[in-house]
Image (tube, rainbow over all chains, first blue to last red; front, top):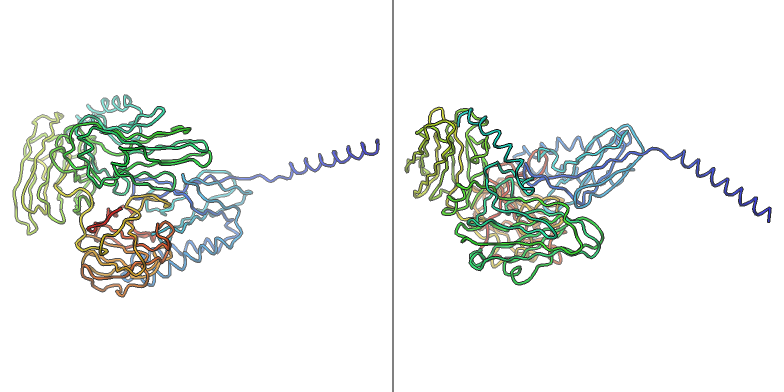
Length: 168
Length: 464
């Protein structure tokens, strides 16, 4: 009886130590509270639901950062092209590649925006974060956006799915 | 309008803003503008018109992609809570509503379309909460009202069971009483943007600045300095234009109408009050055969603002040539939200794979390619529009730079690209989208340009 009591007390003490260690070991987290927005014309503000959103540590996702940067040039080339075949195909392939890069790269956190456009990404603090959002949307090619932010503290932000087209 | 008058009005404006009813919180209206519609929420929300002639204005700020946005109501509901919609009104008002007018309701990711008769005979089911949550419901009309709606009541009522209204936003319609009175005997084709497609007419206004005060829609230059001449072009030409000049202090404000050859058709003059700060708007109508250009010239040193509307056909114009043969079924109307993040920028037609797609007008091919979302697509620039045809079964036989005639087959209906929201079993449909002519096919973000879209022209016999 005494033996089993001692064993129980020992187990309890051991579990308490584990719990205390676990509490102390829990790393701090930051939460990015985002809202995906778009518009039908400048002046409107519409919330974008069902956007696939991923957060990456920039230092570990430099390929994604370089890729989205190069897509800016591809977009402009498409806009100014007289014959848009080559730039359209190029941007289309870049968009497809972006999706595969986002899916295949280890993310800090992933989420899908709900109907009112909001989403939350929670992760351990890092120096710099790139948030990428996209959605395969009927009638809209290249529906994606990204934003680079410091990742040391929680914050709220808008993910502009128009990438400047709405004037947010 | 003199600057001293602005100082005179500033305190009045503030007073009026603070005395507004709660439902004016989201309104862009100024202090002396009449709200033609109200939302009153208690246990239920009622969207009502006032007792004046029932008029709808197209306001770019208050409309959602060409449909006429009525209201946006957000509800918190418990599992199983339901929301429904009813419509009631005086017999004469209901009888005067266009037969093809529909009330569009987007709740969550689903858009429903109700005929007027559906809602007057029974409540229409809008939404059922599957779990505890929040839903945002948008109400809109599929088209504008004709000008000749008689006096009477019209009430659209949202009923909810086990759901609480957490927010309501009245959209739509800002009107001064003078403007409304004038509009009641005219059309509802209102000019509100520097470039727009209104009532089947492309309208350019140059220069254009939003009116600096609460009166009028536009003026020549920002601020309250002396006005300069404004030119307005109509394509195609229109038979009648009505202009209201706000705050004409001096005699000498004029409007001149010209035809497409530049020949002067006629002109009107607006009376000045002679007293700075005394605002008596003056309204004149120019009626001639084929007004292509209107020149608004202010009196020397005068500062004025304008409202302008013209005779046209409210709603989309007929396509010069049918896009599809027969009587095509619209499966997803222009402006509907559906599963998208933004309202539908075009119109979807149901159709079996291989059904011929015809160019709505003569033009030049600006894009012929395949995209991840648009599938096989072709874009044709014509004089009146840039037209996008998406999700074709195969590559169009036409290439960039080719000329096509109106009615020419440019492709066939298919289900290529991203077609998840199509109602068809295999997703086959035509997405037909139109933008103002002359703009880029893609903007600098790679998107189809925002803000230049308009409700596409219609093919005879089409139905929802």
